[in-house]
Length: 312
Picture 1 (cartoon, rainbow, N blue to C red):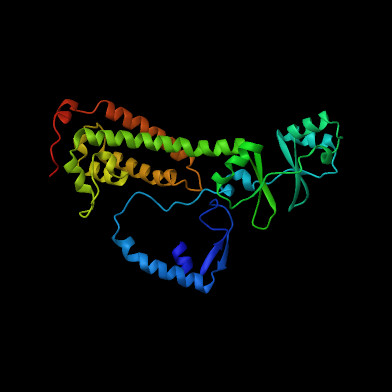
Picture 2: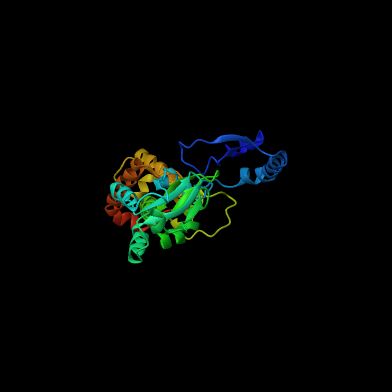
């Protein structure tokens, strides 16, 4: 998509690869010099890309603050002139730990939180938002890399988020951050365990010489075992000699599931901005349980472990 846009001198704002699937983007003109430079760069690398061996990965897209739904989900605010009762009531009604203090959509002047209220009451500062707010709110741009804001969220417990027009559009809390990382971590661990089982099964019955059958002829890296192959290469190896595994299962269904896992793996290991769906997580869990059962009691285990005949 990016190459085709650049070919016609176009781009999107914000970058189409950074947001959610349902986010609106605008088509913009690239500067002619930038478009020409990209065309030259693409031409120089085309032959290299065509000759490179196919792997299992897709281009990495950086995870940004705006990839967290809460970052652009709106923000509840009060003004400095509002009463403390109003701020506390809003926080209790919505189960919030803090509110933005604003005088306009782009004018964030502070934060009022249970902590700032407690400090103000100890010092008997007054009963208005202005008297109880923290005048130094944490504020970041939506396009900023997510990992860059972790220290701020850890320190403050939150950051407010503004878009490219400086409008405050959301808030990311430590709970939002923990939930996002949990969403990323579970599929990552499930895929890793599925890969481990497949590699274990391959190492059990295939020789190192067998593994060379699924790598390019000019492959110049050392192959020590199944860990040296990509998941796609393992899939082709298993597909070509499935009976060797001794798994009591239909070959086509196993290969179908391996292919699905490979596609999910691309999103998981390269942190696609759009999270792995609940359906895909359930699929990972089911395949993991199934593969564990298959590998725990393969047919003719004694025969397959006694020797590793070379593929013909």
